[in-house]
Amino acid sequence: MKVLVIGCGTFGLNIAIEMDRGGHDVSVVDIKYKSFELLPDSFHGKRINGDALAHDVLERAHVDLVDAVVITTTDDILNLTMARMFQDKFKKSNIIALNTKPQYRMFYDNMNIQTVSMVSWGILRIEELLTNKLEQSPYSLGTTEVGVYNVIVPKINTKFSSDDLMKVRQCIIFAVTHNEKTMSFTEGMQVESGDVLHVSTNTEGLRNLYMSLGIMTKEGTK
Image (cartoon, rainbow, N blue to C red):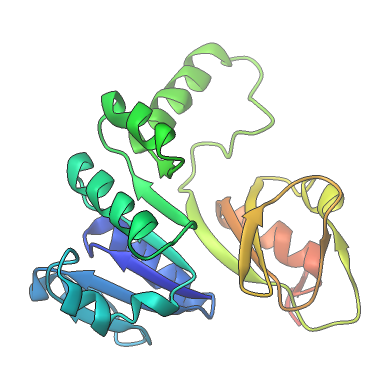
């Protein structure tokens, strides 16, 4: 999948790195060239310095060819403006934007833009900690460090059921990419070799998923 990431701050940086590790073709745009310094040497994607609203910058990013756009600036007005531009001018439908201020959420919803909100997630997590002191929520990943990972299903002759993978402990699979198309991870799906699972988990959950996919045994990787 060809992914265009707008913004190379903390959030955009890590999205670009994880998507690159997952084997996707990633282009990162940022107006400050210095922002690219934190990208590791192992990053295979394109670094494009310039204003993401400028046509020549988007041409260098080959915007006409991208399958998905992730907008990660901390300015909601700018994110909404760019989301509308990608929708109307470039006819992109697979757009995800960072929503930093809850009062702007309704505008994203009205434009049918998928959002990621650290504020909303943080509120839900705090509520969970306060109200589930005796019994931890089955959807909680605990207090250990949680990350977002792209896990490629190994090339074996086995198909995996989403119903079974949803039971993997300490692991939440929220989306899957199949034939370069990303969709929500739901019940009744068949996961095949080469598919990419987009996962929110901690180290233990990642190990459990690897074992379920046959990538790792109890002793270690195969």
